Amino acid sequence: MSNAHNAGFTGYLQRDLLLAYRRRGEAASPLIFFLLVATLVPLGVSPEAGRLEPLAPGIIWVMALLATLLSTEGLFASDYQDGSLEQMIIAPQLLAMPVLGKVTAHWLVTGLPLTLVSPIIGIMLSLPSDGFIPMMASLALGTGCLSLVGAVGAALTVSLRKGGLLLSLLVVPLYMPVIIFGSATVQAGIDGLNWFAPLAILGAMLATAVALCPLAIAGALRLVSSN
Image (tube, rainbow, N blue to C red; front, side, top):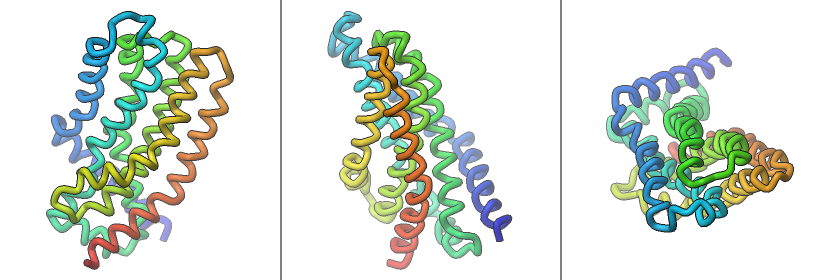
């Protein structure tokens, strides 16, 4: 039975990665958004390093939230429209495993690239060098939480024609703790304090999300498909 569950996870992980590769332009849109906003912020606030430096941790995390939210709405939309979501629901394996595979693929396509390019954003926003490692570590964990929580909202709104606004209203309040502890991790690194404490809280949030969110997503998808 465990082999069937593993097959469900790896099968949907590989499938969604392949689809993202075939739709490279669409998959790259969150990363392009991330870079464009980072370019515009210094123009709108001030290009002076002294003005940007205290704002950089919060700005980077808000941009990561918006970039992730931009791609979350379509996580289950194409599957719902072409009927493959029904096949996933009635498949013999535990529904949470293919769901976890899809969310993992979403993080690999969205969260991981954002984490890898974040040093460039840090340089553009005059982030001190002491904050680079805490920033990348917190983004690696935090974007995983954003993908999992956002997937719950995407599952609840998948049947709605224009569910983007409702999705934002549902998940943004749940994103707040991730933003708070993510930016706190970066700020602690800049201030020379112990940044492992807020990072550990982010890790606990991610572990809780991995345990609970796939079950919540599976329940939401079954509810939507039965209506």
